[in-house]
Length: 134
Image 1: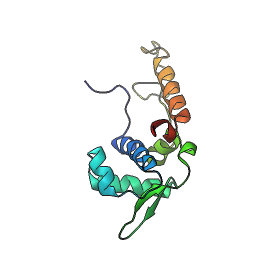
Image 2: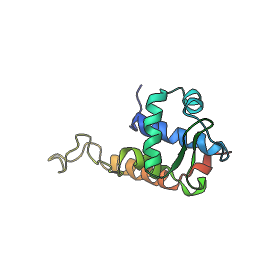
Image 3: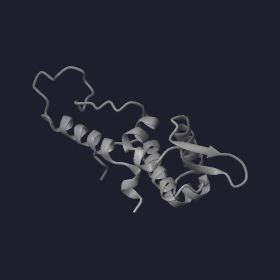
Image 4: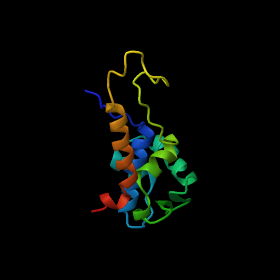
């Protein structure tokens, strides 16, 4: 059964990679370390990490012994910031058909989509990397 909540692979990798990096206690971690832990493609992960560097969420140190570390304290980075660094501004849709106007018969989902989107946005906004560093 597939998930109801759809988050891109890149965003999912970014969220998990950021937690892994945060848990490293400011030590540099390599793409190999992260991809091995998450069981994801090193190439895909590298592209995701570069987007996180561009968003100034992680720092990349090149060369022998290099790797990635957080660009700012873990308690100041929330999931919404990570998600938006990868997928752009959070723009919830209130329609399964992605229509901008209401259906003539009324939405078959009622306010369910709006409610779920609000919950996801609130969760992403309040959840920080430190919540997973235990």
